[in-house]
Image (cartoon, rainbow, N blue to C red; front, side):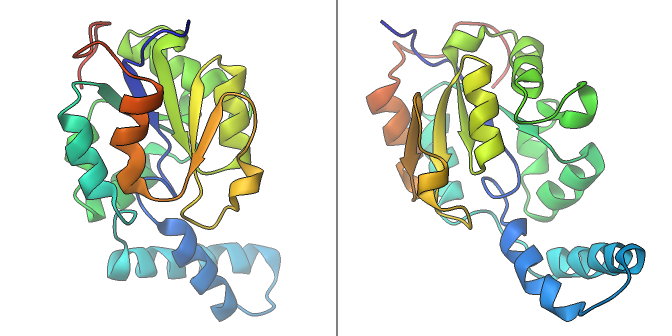
Length: 199
């Protein structure tokens, strides 16, 4: 029998904030440019677009409110840098909610699909991988969660097709509002988080 979930580990881009759709809108503005200039201009346009219109993923506000009632601990583990997450999460009012519980791939030797980042986040929060569930929207992230021995909820409400997220130990969903119910139904805990670490 699986252990009840005590820690929910969120990816950032595509799960908490919707920067991926912004990136898809920005790319056509660049046209054919030399690689170095293209990267510089993409970063500039992307930052401008984030500042102008970034929002939390649809349904996230309701999902987080539901999680607050469960007593489960939460944190972020993202392939993005701390600087990038401070910017995107800060623009959406989410940074303070997760401050002190935000982990970046820059802190580990190998990024996703290696398990290092999720194992690092769980250890930093004081939880065993067996009581963790990862919320991911990318194939590398889902593979990283499985490699870490964690269960996974694959969010297919963004730009990644649900079929890319399917596999053993992964439940695919497409409405973030379903998250609290999925955690209560499939990975029910017996009560507030007891494994240590802040929410």
